[in-house]
Image 1 (cartoon, helix red, strand yellow):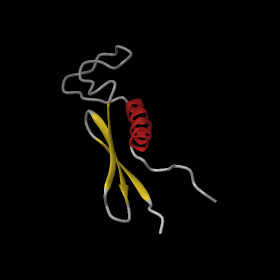
Image 2: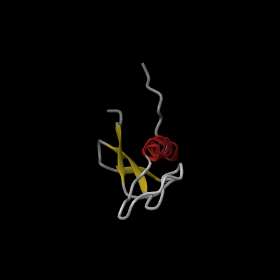
Image 3: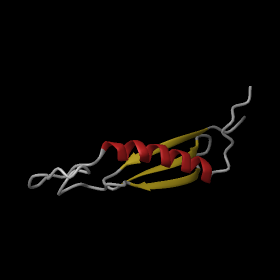
Image 4: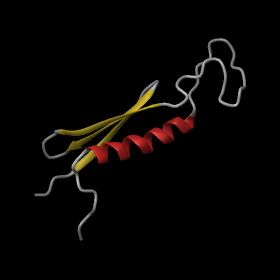
Length: 86
């Protein structure tokens, strides 16, 4: 039986992480981390808009970029073939 794999992604406060796991035996094949470009914004938004006291925001584009980068990176770090045979 051909091995199958899954990717798990965790979005944290400052970064996103991904693991590629073999579903047959639970082995973690590869891991990857992407730190968010904007981190936690506590003083101002990327456009310079000032934030009020006790604000802590994150830029949604950081999540999208991190998702793309951690999934591509974890696949590249593994030896898993991504082509599907017919």
